[in-house]
Length: 96
Image 1 (cartoon, rainbow, N blue to C red):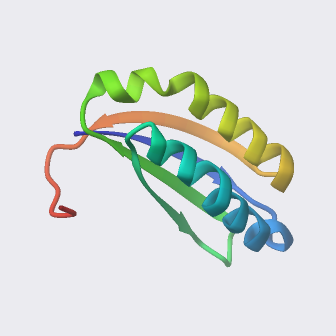
Image 2: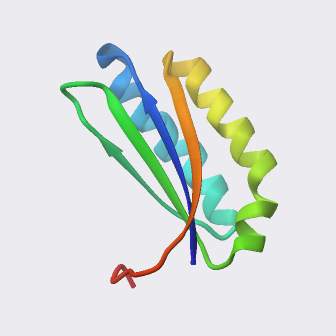
Image 3: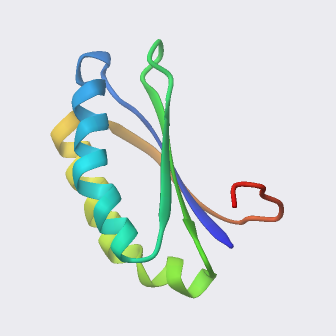
């Protein structure tokens, strides 16, 4: 399993709208490409971390172009500052 982690900071006033937008737009599109995704937020700081999990590295790599477009769209709508995108191999998980 592999994961792509996107870290960002969202203005507090835009956080709920960003969560709704990601839930209704990005998640379904990533799911269609084979990902399982979660979004972690810190409401006090506006920090957010989106993690998409992929069965294999090839699937994750194949989704890069669409994922980049989704990130750009979400950041533009919410005013988020995307600070990084990192890819990992998942070494241990009990998420199922």
